[in-house]
Length: 140
Image (cartoon, rainbow, N blue to C red; front, side, top):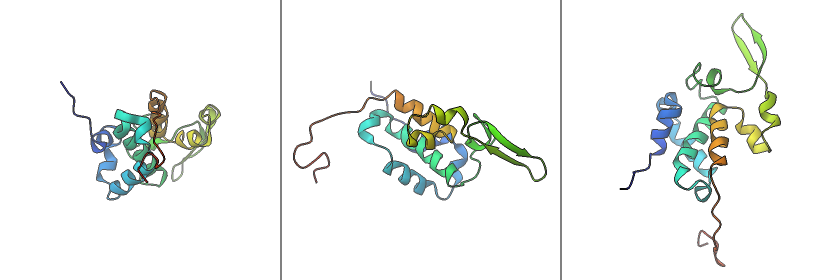
């Protein structure tokens, strides 16, 4: 019995439903695909692309993507470093997240809840190492 894998859009609907209404969704997904290695993630590729797309969308200012749900307002992570009540302003610091991130890519990913989920997903993946031949894995 084979199970049909979920699509990138199905994952986005589950992890960042507000992003489904964004007119730039296709651009975020394409950007995420360019940064996500299918060979590394294997059957988890669509999940990884969806998390990366949500991370990119939030970092580029696509709105709150469901502020108030998840780890922090609008996907931001880290401890609150400043607050202001008049006209409401909240700033988040990297805090302990960056210290444990491991590398610059992880530090950048650790700034949103979707990036943190991607780091967690990545820990459960094992890269595929294959023999590509003289023309490389893409046949070029």
